Image 1: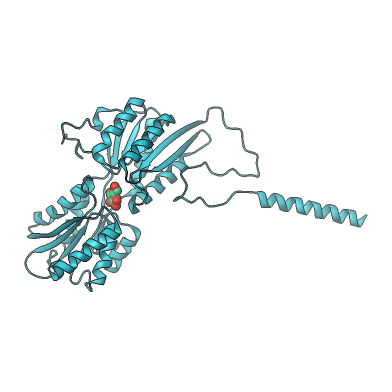
Image 2: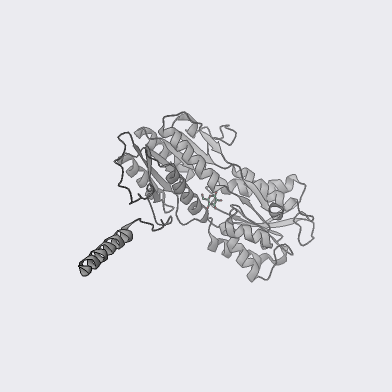
Length: 365
Ligand code: BGC
């Protein structure tokens, strides 16, 4: 009798043990790999409630110009996370994020597939801003709302003024909008950080600020405006400037390093400032500066944009002069919020702007 009770207890313990092992899928979600945002895992203790009859599912296709980009990786992960937080008992956002691989043909194909798949909305980070109108037309013809992000299709400036008459523009469509930051502001902040220094950036004391400009991508307004407005802020502050060289680094760390290394070899102590259109390239330039035996803050200055975590630390420890916060959280949330408005059939604006923030040594005081 005792034996039977014991084996019953043992069997019970095993059953309970197995149930505990099978309970709860708590594997962390890898945001870099995952393409689809899922609703929160069901709690196995209570049976899954049958989906409410009126639960809405929205399918959203996202095409990012290139996954291999520091800033856009932060951006797309936050975009996916934020959509995930909006899932509820009554609504589910299924997000399919594709890598445009910096290839316009690839991206066009992705947008066409999204349309064939009957996506409810498309979020597009164009590979080429000059081809954005083609992508907009595809979505508009299919009756699918489109939110463009990060790469501003030219045609209308930040104040809503038409700058290119031939561009059909986002303003013609009530289901298309652009969410971004005004790159003029980021360039201006870079220049102001330099102009605010006691020597106004003239590190070698020769009476002028001689600079190297490392450009992101000549087709991208972020690159064009940062290049132009960083220097404009210096000249507006009455500083004499001299461009030693301006080279295209495609937003890329290795290319930034190579360009900075060549410039340091060629121009040596003549260089007062290295301006980089983004932090990715500034990280490369920082490595080249160190290899050349130069010291940021003592005999050279280094500026970036984005305020990547590692660059914020560098500004704090003095190995970078300054950067500008490109608010990927604010921008991705604004993009998702307007997407939800579009899905709900609400009226939207055509342009949404998120402010940059100046990040120099004072920012941390
Ligand atoms: C960022 C860059 C990024 C680019 C991609 C810019 O706003 O500053 O880091 O490479 O967007 O389009």
